[in-house]
Image (cartoon, rainbow, N blue to C red):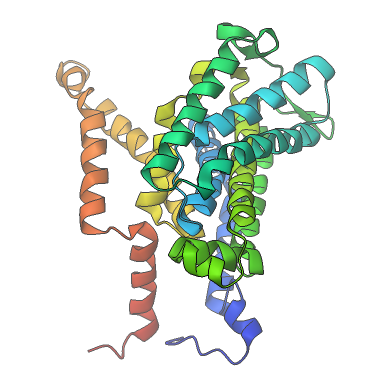
Length: 345
């Protein structure tokens, strides 16, 4: 049994998966993801796709807030830019699906760079207010232009990939989940590079980072751009998943949802993005299933239905009080326990 992680080289130290045990569990997880669509019903496939979309967007926000230390409440706006770009390209020109997703990410990236310009002068709460303003500006643009469908929004036909119409959760699963995995791998590998280390230096102490020769504006804009690109691609996947896009589809509460996801999951951690997004997406559904099991002959389920949000909020607050480093830290603590077992005191 492995009880340590002794590294003999820099390559081994920088490896994403540093043991055969981790690689084995990775293969198990990959096999589970491949088998899931064949054993799950439509509801759980729907939830799997929704969780994957939220993971993709949370990963982008973690690049900006968790790794670079720039607080943003504009993730929903960037998702909206990606979703509307995909819908317009699909409806007006019928461009290929993958090209639409890249275009949606690129448009969102441009929007993120514009919003990120003030980040050199403002930070913390003031930067959060700037990104909130971006959310309201985006909502205004979505609702008041003819090519976006105004307040009625846009409805689009199912996307097609390699001649297959993606008109069900089963088929969309094979698009959304692989793309999300690629985005996660990109995020994890980014922090093995100079760019990722510069992001972390800016988060820890931006003045010291500038003294060391890191151009703050360039890397802050790059962080905003990468984060927004992830959000734009996630928004494009969201558009293909729901196929109806309106200005109300991307409210400020969605941005708060993603910020809460990375806080609960663990900021500055790719694993935290996965765990936080899955937790935030699934807990309300689990509570819903619990209440649905109550006897239909009583009014108890009706009375408790509004309590779902209260219970959900209490779980989040309690979690932040007792484990402020997030679910990722709980997982790391569990791993450390078994790494040292049975040689613990």
